Structures are given as structure tokens and as C-alpha cells.
Length: 217
Image (cartoon, rainbow, N blue to C red; front, side, top):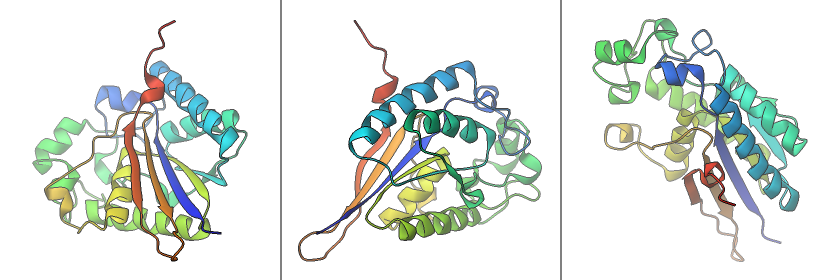
């Protein structure tokens, strides 16, 4: 029987470093805000409802605090523990970690994607070095869980890396396009296999935040 591989990436809830405009690496990330926790709970409720009908075979998360806290909330709702994959972590910011993004971008004359082969701070990864690392981690996960549903709690950059990988975009695509990814949003890819044995990746949804909309009784 033909099988379908499904990759769902959930961005973390709002974090204190996001609100303050601080580069949120290992030092700069101090975790979720109260709103971010509420967003993560709404996200987890939706994922749990879907998980009851179409279970996830695996759940991965990145080690940054805001993602780990989001993943903990999801894990409780799904009763599915998360595997922390350090290679899925967000970009290594080097000397920019904990600094105001406005200062970093002013010095670099733009975000990391605008000069993807150059460091945006001392000791940082270049954008393309980050993409290579994240894409290699995603490829290993996809190969490990071929034909299964996979959930990843991660960063907006992880969504961008996955889209770059599965759309087959060139390394300089970030100079011409980008992806808006809101807190606690979902991106979903599917790769069905048809009766002829052919497969193709399909982007089902991007920046899906329906679960965050207020309910009107």
C-alpha cells in the first residue's frame, strides 16, 4: 500500500527575547512570555486533537529554551515525549547573542539572509552554514521516518530551512524571497506515493494560526 510521509513544523510561542528585540541564542533566550505559554497551549490542544485521529510517529524539538518550553506543553497534551536534536537549533549567533537585533542588523546592513555567505557577528554562522546544518538534520529525520507523520517544534528559521530544502530553492533564494512565520504557527508538508510509485512533496499549509483565533460563544 502506498504511504505518505508528513512533516509538521510548529514554531514556538512568543518569547521574551522576541518582545524585547534581543538576539535569542543560548544566552539571549530567557523563555516564553505569558502570552507565549497561552499560544503554546492552544497549539498543543489542536495538535492533540489531530494526534487522536492520525497519531504522530515521532516528535522532535530544538534545545533553545523557548522551544523546549513549547515542546514540554505539547508533549503533555499529546503524551508523546520529544527527542531533542541539537542540530535543529536556531542559528549560532556568536557575539550577537543577547544583543539588540536593531544594532546587529545596522552593523551588518540587514538580517543574516541578506548576505548569506558572511558572518553577521564575530563567531556566528553564516545564513548558508545554518541552512546546511538544519537541512542535513531534517533530511536525517525524514529518512528515519519515511512513510510516517513527524512533528517538529522549532524556530521560524527551521520553517524557512524546510521550505528551502523541499522546494529545491537555490542557496541565494533568500536574497529575493522570505517566509513570514508567526509564533505558534504550523507549516505542513506531505509526500504521498501514488500507485505508480512516484512521490512529490506538497506544501499543505504555511503560517497556519487558526488555533490562535479567539472563540466566540
